[in-house]
Image (cartoon, rainbow, N blue to C red; front, side, top):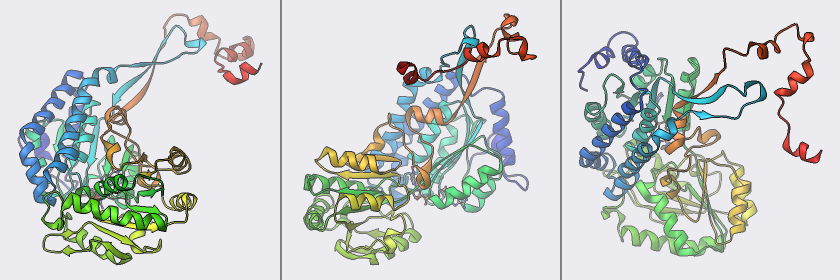
Length: 483
Ligand code: NAD
């Protein structure tokens, strides 16, 4: 990693190897240089140049790490980053504006507003499955909000990690932005430092560790975690369209997507109709032998390969099932006869296997969903709006989509995040800007008019306390209407 200035040089010293780097970035933040809009815009534009000029190296690194197909890499990594960047640049001025609020009687002559303040030094920890998007999209929000940032890419997607460490710093202001590489040991050390905000994307178990580290310093944080996303397929849906959309969302990036449909819930009758449609979709998308398809990714690591492969025994293989350890290839696979107690139903699959769990009806599907931990996404396929509405209203999840899968993440105007074990907080577009901004309470009270103030001072009995209290009272509109 280039070490061209003080901030970059200090981080290797001492027992706490990152204390120097963090305090350097903190000192930069205190100078106020990241606050002006012009500075934020210049850094965002520089990030845009990085994405444009290093586009091919980025695609190459993604291909080396996990055979990520070019189209999938562009759609889910570089294009989404550019969209986030341009949307942020287009809206930053209005997002940064103070938000003036309604006032009560006592503060009528004052100015009351919310100032969007940067937090300070932010730590962003990314996962390996979308290693560009899930590192840079939060970075865009953090820069837009005026923060200094330390990026910690996943060590598992090692080619992207190297690219980020070697190429990104030369585009950004090194006094305010740094990339730190490493695995568990180094990240543990990094987390010993006090940050002003932590943004973590990864597994639920590591999220818990990061939250504990944040609690040590009472650091606010966002956790973008994982989970098992159910997909209910109703008997009335358009069969082949549902199968196509399911196959696309499940096998995109070889199933290594946090919002992928994790398992299908449907009736036994529907399963019999769905299987040939899924088979057809898989053959149409990836050909007779998906291993030869340029459009199907590989499992990221040997460890993940072993884990996903072992889940294959959780049911009867209806489609696929082939594996090739040398290539870390697992065919698009559909499992049937999967009991809820099977290992594949106990953990997030995060691979190209789609189990089908049969249920008697919609109500049983909803009960089953509500019996599990709250997922990142709930999906439903049905032509009946009542069915869609019932699933939406009777379940809880980070996000929801009907009649499609994973596509909701491309809508920058929607918040992205989990609930409960699938995460804490939200981002994308304006939600990112707000996540990385402290909403500071500001009241600009007048220095004159002291007489008004004296109404609040003791001894209270000298005023008319009841009339004073009523000046700040908020009445319930519905009660007023009734009166
Ligand atoms: P992970 O939790 O293993 O690792 C994520 C990051 O944490 C990496 O940078 C890693 O170096 C670091 N890390 C690992 N162990 C650590 C420790 N003990 N202390 C501190 N840091 C540590 O996750 P992963 O395997 O990279 O990614 C897969 C998981 O991420 C899945 O569960 C998936 O659902 C989830 N995910 C969630 C989202 C989302 O937006 N909600 C997006 C992508 C992935």
